[in-house]
Image 1 (spheres, rainbow, N blue to C red):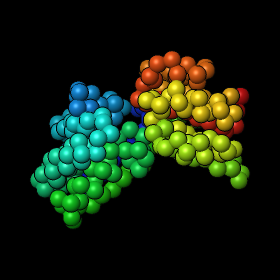
Image 2 (image 1 turned 180 degrees about the horizontal axis):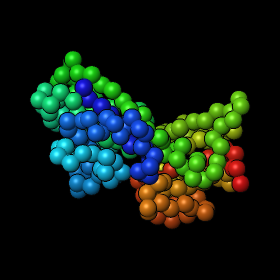
Image 3 (image 1 turned 120 degrees about the vertical axis):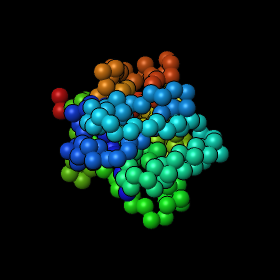
Length: 234
């Protein structure tokens, strides 16, 4: 059985009770790290709940959009996970936020199933960065007959324009490389005035931007989120 455990956005107190239980029962724990270093934010959040003696193994994933490079990394890492599962029977993979949303877990789990067709895949949901950011900024994302959209800042521009041009509240992930263009798009559609920006929500290095246009001055951190619309409580 392979568990994909969502550890939430960064605050260790936002782990679910189920996530903590599964972590304590896991025979082996995998975490993702950049190919440039062995740092894992997910492990930083959940590490205190992993019993001493439980093996914790870092899987290297390159920060690239090159599909061939990514496929090779997913396959190599899935082969390693399958090898451990064959021996230990249960393992867990930690992911920030939720395993069903912009997570490496889906790619990894599909590849593991190719090597071990009979493996069980279980996702343990986690609180998303969008939910945590809304709580941190005191914003109601949707009420009554309203709608809420989650989208990647890497989406094609016509998609982003469609979302930002309406009255729907939106959470935009992965804005870091396209921050300047996205801010310009929000300004052009008249929605910049109702946009809030936050980086590393829930971590000690959390930063709330008073003016989202500040994101245009330099490349913001990878974990930067925009909330567009919604209803402020204060």
